[in-house]
Amino acid sequence: MQGLPDLGLRETRRYFFGRAATGLGAAALASCLDPQLLKAESAAAPQTHGMLPMLHHAPTAKRIIWLFMADGPSQLDLWDYKPGLKDYFDKDLPESVRKGQRLTTMTSGQAKFPCAPSVFKFQQHGESGAHVSELLPHLATCVDDMAIVRSMHTEAINHDPAITFITTGSEFPGRPSLGSWLSYGIGSPNHDLPAFVVLISRLANGGQNQALFSRMWSAGFLPTKHAGVSLRSSGDPVLYLSNPPGVDKDTRREMLDGLGALNQQRLETKGDPEIAARISQYEMAFRMQSSVPELVDVKDEPKSVLDLYGPEVNQPGTFAYNCLLARRLAERGVPFTQVFLRGWDHHGGLPDSIPNLCKGMDQPAAALIKDLKQRGMLDDTLVVWGGEFGRTVYSQGTLTDKNYGRDHHPRNFTMWLAGGGVKGGVVHGETDDFSYNITKNPVHVHDLNATILHTLGINHEKLTFKFQGRDFRLTDIHGNVVKEILS
Image 1 (cartoon, rainbow, N blue to C red):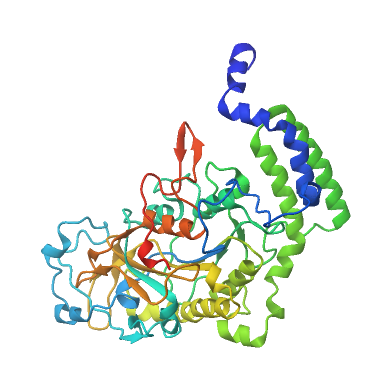
Image 2: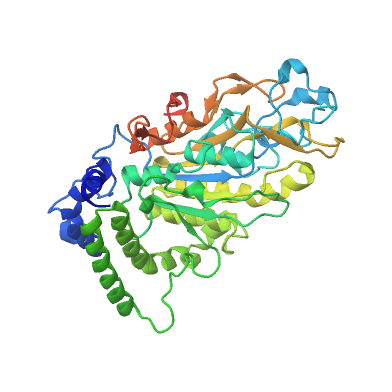
């Protein structure tokens, strides 16, 4: 464009601030190359490079580890004990309970909706007396450190919109994820690792999985440097992390210096903040060449710690290995780590499949809590466990006394939180006798995200980003902090 149209373009908010920041470009590049150049003579707190000049209130957590059980684990078989269902075996779910609520296309054509009580036994554990399934013997020993929320609910009834909703606050793709909001808002004290790391665990035996898309850890409309970095379980943890044959560290440094100078010239000409993000990410990648290999090498861990996480801990890509990696990331100050474990989509054959999945999940998840606790880190590390929705009380397909499947159920599901200022030994919320509707203390997805941000000292209503003429936030226009589960 030329003339007046070009002038108008340059005077938009984006171009005004982009050009206003141009004079800081050299300083920004210098800080990437050597942060000591811009370091104050004395600092009261470690630099985190976030956008918030100060937190909105005193935080109780410094970092988050979310153990994301993708595909919707069955609350009825793990956490939400309903002994009275035995009397309803194979009986149609009463219409007074379902109330005409929507169904997925997978079960909407069924002539019957037969109730399927869990075939697994439950027992009370800990001083809190929380009921936990026999499938989770290790996590059962941690209930006094947990706030178990049985009254989660969401609007989305299918996997893709539901998991997009809980990770980004919207069913529509394109919004920033929770980890990206945290990176943007508070940054990270670790100069050598990303603020947001994603670990995708390999599918456990008995798992039935849906696809995971990178938009679930995308920066959306935030600067791209705030996107999650997914570490791979084979080859380089990050693509192209190793130098190619014939290229040593000094050569790579010289190349990046030249590339940085070219990008800096472009930044000064165009004022596009994405160019500054590109400069920053190239420098982060260079630093990760040293930090990541040390991070993923768990050989220095004591045998007692490795034994705590279970026999699969030495196998990269397993949930056990990723839980240990999450603790190592937390030690290094990474503010948000999301560990995905897929396979909970049990539309059929649940009694045969879910025990194998729990066997690979239960011990490592409990080990993470215990490991953090024995290191004095659980007090300021919030661990979150849960998926995008729950499962139905009625069976999908044929029901027998030994076999059943469960469809998607957004009306209520169970999650738990531990550490980071959350009360231990708490069971929050109640459901009806069929685990179909919430009867007390509902907790919406936005409420969960508002509470997570609150533990980090962030008022969820004030962490915003202007995009397309509107101030967006993770919790959209909803969300209340669940104060009852906070200490």
